[in-house]
Each structure stands twice: as C-alpha cells, then as structure tokens.
Image (cartoon, rainbow, N blue to C red; front, top):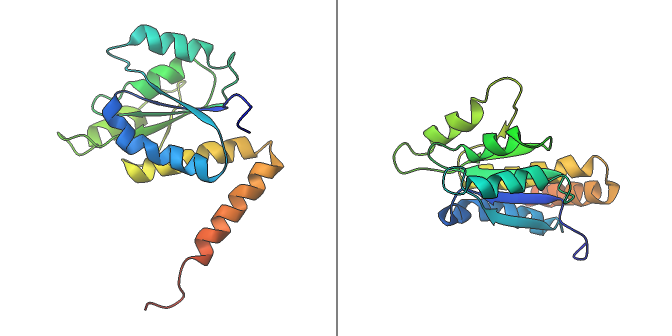
Length: 162
C-alpha cells in the first residue's frame, strides 16, 4: 500500500487545524490506508485550492476530507471544483465553539453536496472512517479490515461496569 498513490486527501484551512484533522489520519493509519495531507486556505491560498481540487481526480484521489473553522469555506469550495465526494469536518472555533463552522459546511446549496460530520475530534475520526468505508465499496480487503476494526471496538466494551 505504501507504494500506491494515496486515494484520500486530508486538507485543512490552516496549520492549527491539524490538531483536529490528525484524528482522521489516525483512523486511516489504523486501517492501513495511505493519504496525503495539505494546508489549503480557501481565503488565503485560493490558487492552491483551485489547483488541488481541479487536479484531484487526475492524481487518483477518490475522497477528500476537508476540515475548516470559522467561515469554513474550504469543504464547499473544494466540492464545487471536483466530482469527488468531499467530507467536511467543522473545526471548533473560539468565537462560536464550532457552530459557525458546522453551519457553514452543512448549509451547502442544492447541487454542491458536502457530507458534514460532527464538530472537532469525533467528526475528524468519523470522516476518516467514512472515507475508508467509501473506498471499501470496491475493495473487499479493506472492507474486511474495517469489519475487524469494528469488531475490536465492540470487543473492547465491557458488559458490566467495574
């Protein structure tokens, strides 16, 4: 797998978003999936965003996980420039605790969908798992790894409190 080009990209609006988005990467690592990570600001690096999104299919990407805080334009802007599924992760903001990010990502106009996850760490982790599940539709070996990961999670839940 390490020799193959990654099929998943994790992008974020700023370096500080990595504290949240690393949880998506950790889930992909746990499932043995490669990915690329990029800092791409919809506001500060629009040319970088355009080049990334327009070239994503050609580079072999299959899913984009995009985290952004505040106005959170990155997931929607990426989705507007590619046919790939984009999973949006609202990064918790200081001003409104991530509600601004959540609403900015979730309220996309009809015709430009972004799958929106929960705010923060849980949303990033679930975005990684959802990206893997999307790829697993056509990859039985990956599907088996996901099932094993889920079984391990189930087995780790005690039946009675200690």
